[in-house]
Image (cartoon, rainbow, N blue to C red):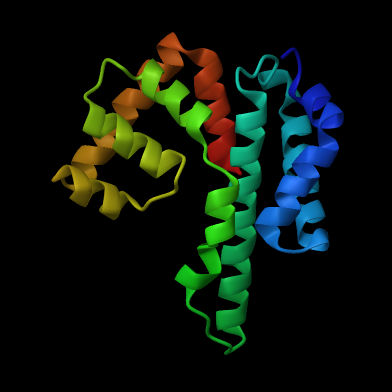
Length: 174
């Protein structure tokens, strides 16, 4: 894959269909895809060769959808119409619609020097957006210990797998 923007243009209809499925309606699906595309266009120079473009874009769309749902849940709460944020964020059809297998496996492979529970926790935190507390409890560590381990893992990716680190950084900024 030479260019992420070219990939978006070539697969726009399929990406839009995926986004609409996640969001539950056409308007939000289109807005989310446009937001993701705009952010990636701005960072096009950093994403010259995305290894798993389709999976990467689907993770970006999923995260942007979650961000939209969180923002709406906060807005609703602020207006006095409380909704459980867990219900707003969890959409079983979205989970069934997309499994981030290729991207998570790529991260897992590139972090093979670390033990499996730590790799899984890293993926859960950065890709699945689990909280630091949840990840720390699952590892039996303090938040500070996990933060240090993850900083070491990010530094390793940055030194040895620059392209993957760049993709992870952009994904986290969305």
